[in-house]
Length: 363
Image (cartoon, rainbow, N blue to C red; front, side):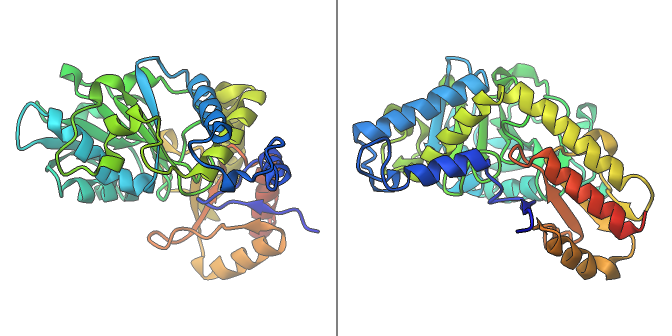
């Protein structure tokens, strides 16, 4: 059988060891006689799974004690509504204003959703340059009493990644959508008020959203915020106020444990740098392929690229599929190709893609 490498942007590749463990546990988790899918979320079996997952995630990201970990539903897109409903109640000035830096498709979606709940100030945008960079902070036009600043630190579709943490005056909290690069690089959690991530890229299967929130930002929800999405209520019930996505939490916990065995986030970052350098080097040899992102803003996780002659796109994709290189078609909004090389993508997969890039280009 041809070796398959899945370059999907999400739901994305999972570590084989995790999939094998899940398969082994499917009918009988640890002698309980139950599949994790069948367990009560309030039973001792699942509670132990939950506590292990929280403990391991806290260790992986060195999350300070004054930050809470919440397991929610609704995906990253859902958090674009849940976040303002939880944070706007603390704004010193009403109606509140939220600052945004617009760096691509996902920050754009966040801006549209937040505008339903507050005034929105786009402090900076790379849209005039077709989302190929992160605007330098010295050009941002921030609001004096903004409720918070929202950034997407890695744009999955556009392939743009922050290489710095903003420094804000006055203690304005930074809310960071890290959905597509969480756990791929070291992060100083204390620099952010809120970090959130849809699980289906570097954490686990779709259905789970991880929220890491500083304790002082709890308890400020608007009256319209549903109880199941009120962070304070969710925290008080250890993410069990309603039935959580239990199986997704279980798989996430397996991924967290797997990453710790691999040496943690620092070890994964080292591997990811190596994978990204290998792939970008192949794309940059000549102009047969094009990556249009500024070199200092290129994502290590999501690598969009275009063929100089786009009439060859279908031929390229067919040849890739025949070699077991799957899900390389770019997002419909931007076209071209995209290779997502998350933690679980081995360097052998990137090398196989590089070999095909060279072969197809006739090098």
